[in-house]
Amino acid sequence: MKKILLSVFFFFPVFLNAQLFQGGIDVGLIASQVDGDDFGGYHKAGLSFVGYTRLNISHTLSLTAGVGYAGKGAHSSSKMSFFTTNLHYAEIPVIINIEPGAFDNLSFSGGLVYGYLISGTFNDGYTTFGEDFLNLRRSEFSYSASVNYKLSDRIIVKFVSNYSILPVVKNASILCFGSSCWRNNNLRLTIQYKIFWSDKK
Image (cartoon, rainbow, N blue to C red; front, side, top):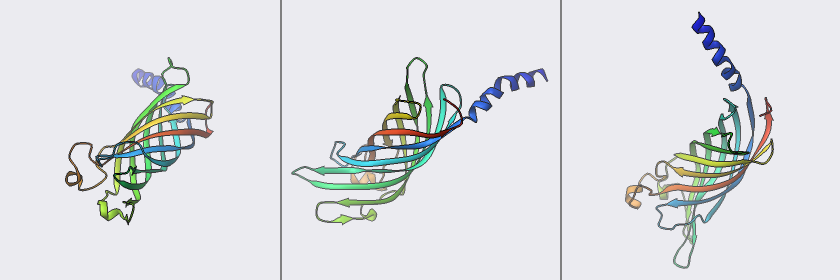
């Protein structure tokens, strides 16, 4: 019985902290490319939007999940070649946030993002092709990592790196060689705005 009471004593505050939650929106700009398409550079601009909920596990650790949209792809307008790949995804991010006490207003995040392809097109300057032309995968899983700076109790600015775990096309081995073939690679600058919260964190 004594061990049970001690366990309750130590873990009950953690349980309470886990109930402290907040939520809001995360909007921003995306600079993207598709690794392995033979054209480097983050030349494709896009938008991102996420509605999120965040559970505060402790003063330094929290878990964020949400549902949103991301516009990815690639673009080249060089004299040698013109093309645009447009990939529109619905996304579900699951992210762990760490707030080290040694860094004022600075935090770090990392996790996984599931993406469902809403639509995809490829334009070579003359013709627009649909999803079947590239044989695109409907589902995408990607890594996500970010550095975050808190401007106020409600606003956080985030610099995010996002990279596909698997190729976004089914026949990647035919299209090119290498482990990074046809993977979404994008950088994001977003603003997270807290709309509601159950604590003052």
